[in-house]
Length: 283
Image (cartoon, rainbow, N blue to C red):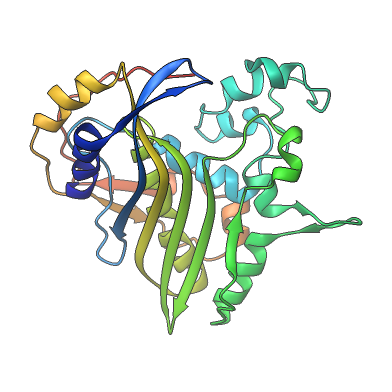
């Protein structure tokens, strides 16, 4: 929590106002934020200075790992974050590549599981790194990337959290995750949960020891209409100790994740929190 609150305070103290053309709103912005999560000791980074929700974040992660390309698939596993992007974005609705209602196109997990090769065929990035890590191999390229500029026109949204790099030292597994842009009051905790869970889950199915996750954010910002609540409410609250995440130990392979895993296989315990804060969302 301290590093999260420190970043919020840094934005308040040192941020620069930038007008965001997509939303038409001003953002208080800093460049280059780094956060670190202790997965080894199960310090689950769920925000305690306001009530936060973790289930949709993990459900979305499961959809990415399965390569989902349709908002209905995400809804079925408990995630509604793709409904608007798939069905309400004007540019995507007018895109001739859109296949119909709920279609998301070639975004996020589609790229991770089925990156198109020049001349035909596809690369399953996730399968490659799971196979390597399971064998104790780290070729310094155990990377899962969703960022494919050559296919931005084939999807409803370019990725924010775009690349995950796994590093193996003996049996110790680390993760470095990269994010191009982050709405700190609303989006950051969602992404923190996903980084932590991704490392814990991959370590479990590859038989490695999860250690630490390093989360890099290029552009961290607070919208003007969020600033008073962040500065005058959330930053005035004292944090509680971190909760813990439990993952069903029966999850032992990528095939398990692809076929039967649900939100019921994840549990958060010891979560103390302050009241919720209804931050405005900028579409």
